[in-house]
Amino acid sequence: AQSVTQPDIHITVSEGASLELRCNYSYGATPYLFWYVQSPGQGLQLLLKYFSGDTLVQGIKGFEAEFKRSQSSFNLRKPSVHWSDAAEYFCAVGVISNFGNEKLTFGTGTRLTIIP
Amino acid sequence: NAGVTQTPKFRVLKTGQSMTLLCAQDMNHEYMYWYRQDPGMGLRLIHYSVGEGTTAKGEVPDGYNVSRLKKQNFLLGLESAAPSQTSVYFCASKQAGEFREQYFGPGTRLTVT
Image (cartoon, rainbow over all chains, first blue to last red; front, side):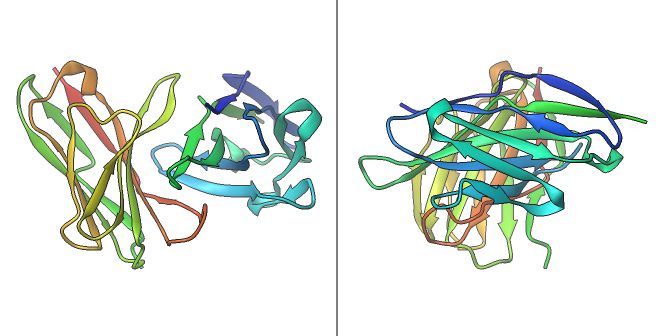
């Protein structure tokens, strides 16, 4: 079965600094990979996704993520964070089950705090 | 467009009481989902629906029932609430098609005492 690990529960970054959030997955093949963001009191919003092709994917709000097959990782990056980026970030893995159903497995999330 | 809306936003129940959470979407999406979010556990799928009149179990279906009588609505029921069902519940919807984007509602915070 697939699994997702986000090793950092909470990260604090100064405004304007760069950011990298880690995500590792476990799956026998290359899965579909996603990053979602959840602002306080809100539902989740898709930042970006990777299916195949170029391993560096661009998303909304200036975020990007890089798929590294050798490390089973899909880390999220942003060169310069803004106070509005404070939120919880979820990595997710999507696979197709033996019955042809989609299954999306979420990581436990990383809470990002921005300090002035 | 309102997107995905959830009713109510907050609710407190006593053990053994029942309630229904309503999810509505105005995007004509085929697929709808109910998740629960617990601290340190991410989101877990409770039930989902791939179309009007169809439902299926997700990862943690016990203690919940669902119905999709209309395409735009997906109801989640708790027949006899338990403290273990204290959680934040999210509804999501998406178009048919492999791993199209899921659009999430704002959530319902449920406390069972």
